[in-house]
Length: 546
Image 1 (spheres, rainbow, N blue to C red):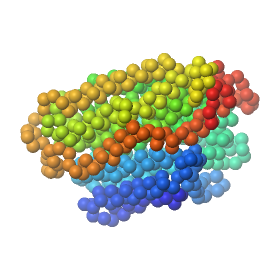
Image 2: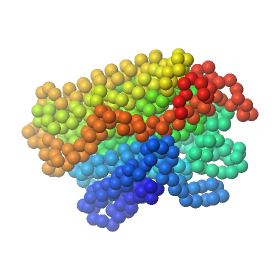
Image 3: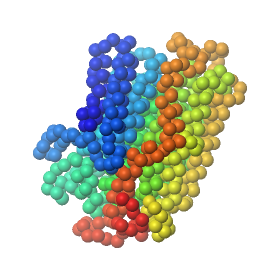
Image 4: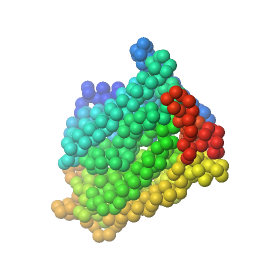
């Protein structure tokens, strides 16, 4: 299985290199085949993966780089990492097809960096040592920076610089936290290592003060990537100015690098600190849910509206994770996947409309159901999926996040409710966050009403023929429909049968919850156990489930 993971990561890089020697007019075909071959390798891994043992790292392989410093390049996947790689592989060909007519200049540069970005994101999820993880994590910045800077809209230069400065600064702070952790482990064990599992094993024995420092540094990097309020301000501008494929990748996968970092590093490496500061993190998530939702309500730029909706939606994801119970963490991980389907698809719909009308202003264009009924049908479907309509993919993830938040209360722990842990969140956090679902329904249905229904509105000069020299059909063409169908299928299947995803993430989630609760009791500087926070159960108490 390890060689299939290597093929999945290396193939986009190989095809990007091949593209440099091929004619520019064939660049999109090279990119399509490169992303599809990588996707086939991921499908093969999905078939060979032992889902009955999804919590274990499988497909492991490593190569020594600098032995004296403990530097190795190691890969391996559990159920969560593999499903995120599958999401990345799915969106790769989708982004290439979506760019088929939208990008007409410097094709080799565009499609080459799109492939490099796909490889870097796959590398993040497959990495089992800090060297490979951080290299891939940082390298995602360069392709996205160039895609925004070169192929973005009118304000692309400011958007690209803001994107780079925010995310790069956060990443440097996270690096400082990781370097401190590596040094602490080396000082304690007498040997240097960058192996994530080994670092996690030792990190839980850090005193609360040290864990708090590491958690703060990690959140500085990962919260910017999510993004979590108040470090979210780079995202709407980047989304609005990025090309369509850039927005799809940004919403579908790149933001998930932040939530995945919280899941993979912050929770297991600093469990006592996470328990200590879970209410504060949850408060920021709830503020982001409501604040971004209200901003969406007053937007005229439809792409900026969907961009702010990502801030609101991913607030649910973070809220579920810091509930620190089975339902909440399952909902948070499930949200990483479901958000990529529905919100990525909304950016595709806006991109297809923008190709025809060259505006995103809902005051200038709307009522398109009479002229573009196929486009309007897809638009309504994906908006309802993003709202969280029962039967579509957004519903189970949001519901589990809210249930987990509700159960994250000492009263539930005392009652030994299944999967409940006593972190001081509880009903009030869930109720206030639940208002975000109502706000989301308001702004998304308002958007659908303006864009799809009512009197037809078109920008001046378009008249009865709004397509340009790209010879786009009036409504969606076959290529565009083919691009959307996999996302429709995913939204329906995982909405009607979420168990297929939940089964794949249940074991790793349960293992993470048990791990956090086992080491939730802080340790003093002399490694002596001190009093646990009143809102956190000790290991083995409060209905812990392995």
